[in-house]
Image 1 (tube, rainbow, N blue to C red):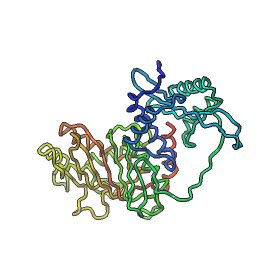
Image 2 (image 1 turned 30 degrees about the vertical axis):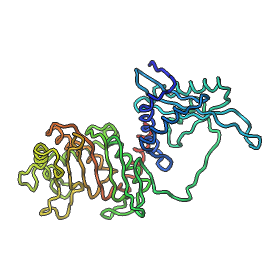
Image 3 (image 1 turned 180 degrees about the vertical axis):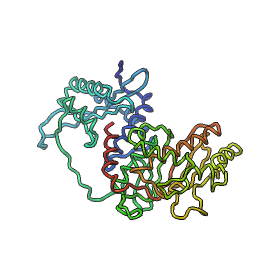
Image 4 (image 1 turned 90 degrees about the vertical axis):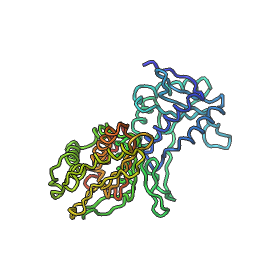
Length: 390
């Protein structure tokens, strides 16, 4: 693999920002109490200013492969310890590094760090340091393999809790009127981040008498909608995925739900009247691409008495020439079934997109109760750890 390392320029800012954003999302998912995802505009301003005002004594590198920036590194000389400091005077530098999604584990980080160490020797620097999240097992393995060892240990205790920015773009503090929002690039990332939020910050309560952890009034939004999402395919239970698919596309009543009508019946044969609601949505958006009311429901109030469908409102619309879907759900079980809901909603969104000749856009779901049942706590936590580790 022919990777070129060169000095970063202002022309690289867009690529550097994209890499940093992906790294920030990764860190925020691993350690949401410590990390967040900053705004794109602020990052552009930061990196542009850093390169425009770069100190010649510092180092700013990018790794380039086939014309694409796939990694970046910054190294800054530390201020020397003064005479009144107990630390021994050593010339040191601090490095920050990030490698693009899809390129980690291919030796790019090793090459960047090697270049920084050679720069440090040329600058007369005795040692270089870096910071790594305790939860970032992959990065810790790399740094240990390269000879980096703990030099100091920072211990922290929160004495004034902040509104919990548990996942990117999310805050939880009902007392200040802010509601939780989880935004991610893919369905699988949404599932993992919401689940992490529920396990970390969910309140203990009951659902039908069963103990759960719950986040109230949550919104999740996925930029890309792929029914074959690789994270869900890897970590979802195939049996539950198959069950949910039958629910959405098989007209048979659902025994596990007290023989309630399936989603398929509710969507494609509403009230068993032959009304195909999905076809109606397609025709409505074809007739009026600006329609804001191409909304359908799975709730059948004349027959739904004991079971009320979790996903009850699907609102399709054209935004930026693509088909977006906004959903209301009274509750979603993120430990067992919600990832299946995400996949089937993505399939419905694709059906409408193909029927109108448009691409799929984003999927947004407003959930009154996002929860995980107690028997799934440990299993879901393990899935999150395995996903974070890659």
